[in-house]
Length: 172
Image 1: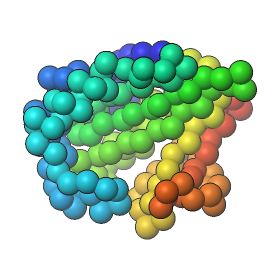
Image 2: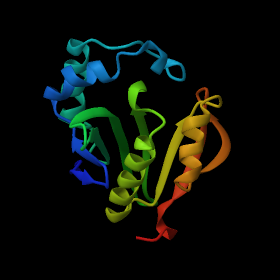
Image 3: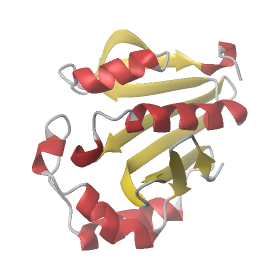
Image 4: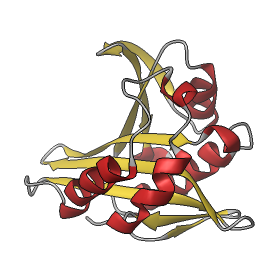
């Protein structure tokens, strides 16, 4: 499975390329963005190296790395990224997703709209279950997950709560 362009009302989720690194380093530059996950604002060079690794894909044929940058059409700028790590097995397929919206674009529903676009794309490709790990204090992400149909399982994964959505029963 490889990332493909996903169009929503206001957004275009564009498959990740190494040349997105410079603009994304700016999107991810605010230190406050790292309140709920480890790390610090990356340099463009760090992003180029990271993106080259991600674009190369998973070495495991049962695992697909699907990565997108999120472009806001009206402003023609990148606002964040979306990722789905899809694992296929005889029991079905599961995607672990993450989304990050840069601070200047938070609070506008961009993350939720990107999530719904990605969830539809995953469902259309036969993914059964989607999980997201959200820091217990990250109310904005928990709210977006709940609005997207996820349920908090109460399970801790590292220091984050696991949220789960079964796509097999959701409408197309």
